[in-house]
Length: 325
Image (tube, rainbow, N blue to C red; front, side):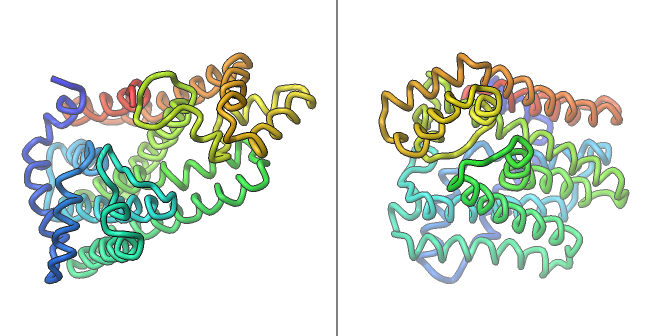
């Protein structure tokens, strides 16, 4: 049994039912929209976000989920899917998880409108059922994700990212949605704000580790679905590079910045930058930080009694930093 199936095991029935409810939550009277949403549903990824919602809910409540938990998971997945559709338009990307992206098949205008539709369906699912507490958690996450993306674009133009700014970017861009999943899961079944906050922090820490792992893939030789050096080509400042920029000599720093600004399309130069970052402790430093976030997340689970749900969440935390793609 692969690791994802192991994680899913304690919530297998919930995930089966969730898929039906999720598809229903997307339906429309417009045939074109239904065709596109059918395409989206049949090309789903690992569904880690709904898994976080259900596992967190069951861990904090001793195995209970309810209709609010299903709605929370659907809202998160609707909004996550909307952001992916919009991201592919922004990045002019033609592929998503090995399949054609929505914009590649139906063009940008339709892709943007589909993203807007999914976002509004998510918000209305909460409003129509009076889940205003869940809606607040999700709305804050959407705002933070937009801010994170814009902060990254602003900083990439000037290449002046400090480590603290990098953490702020990845917290908003990636970690905030996983934090929302865990907070939502807890909030759907219990009223204890301290535990909800605890789970929110847990999700944020996993999200930070997840993004650092993603950034490390840019320096990997393995086939992971994105070419090596793509972040450098796109002038994205990630932790291995930021650390090396802050610790190398002024001469080397000048060469690095010049390489990223003016020679990022030159394959040979990009390879030299990757080698330089590797040889100057950039990867080891980032890996160390990633493990710190992971350990901090695991320590937050220590407050809960052992259960299959806690075990699955522990597996999930370890999978985040051990995954190969």
